[in-house]
Length: 196
Image (cartoon, rainbow, N blue to C red; front, side, top):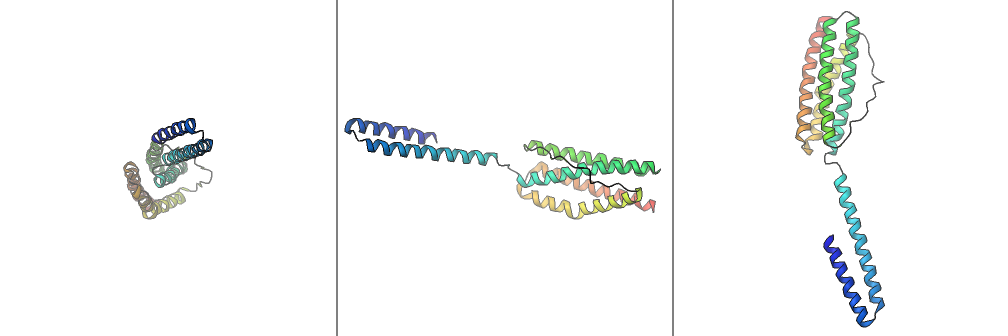
């Protein structure tokens, strides 16, 4: 872009000398129009370069991390509420399990939020108003079904979506969360089998 400006200035000087020698104003006018067109073209090219720089480098990874972050926030809240119900129902061990899982979800939430921030994105606000809490038995059933769904369908899709962008930290933390969900499911099933 700078070399184009130098060429443009050199042309303007050249035509100014021609004008001084021969007095041809139409030549000067043509040069002024051409110079203005080149400057406009250079500015447009610079604007395009700025737009390209501002596009996120990992758009699919960011989209998946936003979904996962929201899911972890909701899961943490849900499991803490499940723990309160279990405690009130006299199921202390189940309450402890739900609290432990909630703390695990909080770790994933923090990890996903951290990656989003490193990618220059703010984690989305999460609406918790639609979360339903029931009896301890129903909460265990719900938790098992959710963990099963996440393990068997959601996490494989997430890995597939972010894989092509090859953001190593995102892939690593998504895999960590996936493994934790497998462990959650086994623990919940074990507790559930003891409650009838």
